[in-house]
Length: 381
Ligand SMILES: Cc1cc2nc3c(=O)[nH]c(=O)nc-3n(C[C@H](O)[C@H](O)[C@H](O)COP(=O)(O)OP(=O)(O)OC[C@H]3O[C@@H](n4cnc5c(N)ncnc54)[C@H](O)[C@@H]3O)c2cc1C
Image 1 (spheres, rainbow, N blue to C red):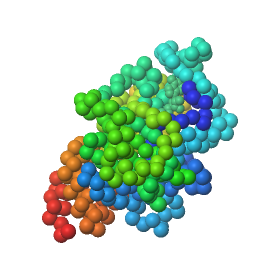
Image 2 (cartoon, rainbow, N blue to C red):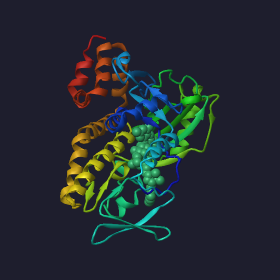
Image 3 (cartoon, rainbow, N blue to C red):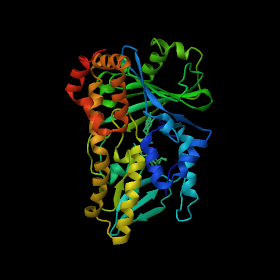
Image 4 (cartoon, rainbow, N blue to C red):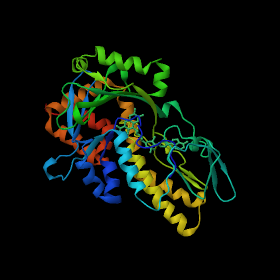
């Protein structure tokens, strides 16, 4: 395992971990979840509040039956803590040799695989590279030849605050769909000790075409947006605001080739609606490990066998990514958003239907069906 950073290290992120991340931990080692529950740097998250462009909030729990659950369906934990927590687990494994503070800069193909060089000209040779070097992946550019496309890429800005008022007592994450940030959103995610992760994300092509300065827009929202500004009256910024890319999974890419697989952000797998990428990164890592085992058993590291990895990843994620892409386009219609939120706040059945959509992908697909909106238009309340 080679990483350019030395852990613990920060990663610019919203810090929210969804059920999909927990799904991977359940398969890997369920005790990881027990440790997260007890970890004082993590807080439980039981749902999400969507705030429509007209300011009306809609609280949707992640699960219909909270009391039946052993632990919360989601967590929020600063990445400096979460990534180190996972990294420590890798360090404890005697089969893994770890090289921190080692940035791999160039990659060349050899007869047996791929050679990577760090800044001191140390060479790391492998028959099978699992490239998980993030949104600005050097490997994805040099070997997989993936390009960043503004319409499938987002920029996100993150800030840590203390003393933001009225943070949700049940750790609900808040997504505010503010007019001037559409089709992106402004978020407030509660953290332990009265802190909050606050940020904003917008698609790169929209930032360019509307000539938006993300940092300026972020502070404008905090200082002048009704419902937001009162909550930040006594808030203190803890650190500099920081910006990073989010490669969206709204387009299928080739995730493997001779002697390599791409994982997580290097594979561009971020949910195009929610901006969630940790769960998909973990899931792709799990599939890559399973595929690597098969390759080693068969001593075959060719692209022909490695395409099975692409199939696994997209079989699990493509439907969901496509749906989220449709949702991303729907939020270009703020009146529709206002209308659904208003109806759902008055109609329990509709609220329950939206809640079920978090657990059931087929139900979620109703959101892109015009009949769904037609039905709620004529619903009783
Ligand atoms: C502002 C923002 C908010 C977000 N909010 C959320 C959220 O709330 N929830 C969520 O699920 N997702 C969120 N995401 C997405 C999430 O952060 C990513 O999808 C996730 O971190 C991907 O994990 P990864 O392991 O693929 O990449 P990373 O977490 O970026 O890890 C890449 C690793 O590779 C190392 N590395 C990079 N280049 C090299 C190199 N050349 N040589 C050696 N090592 C290298 C880095 O040091 C790093 O440790 C957000 C992203 C942004 C930018």
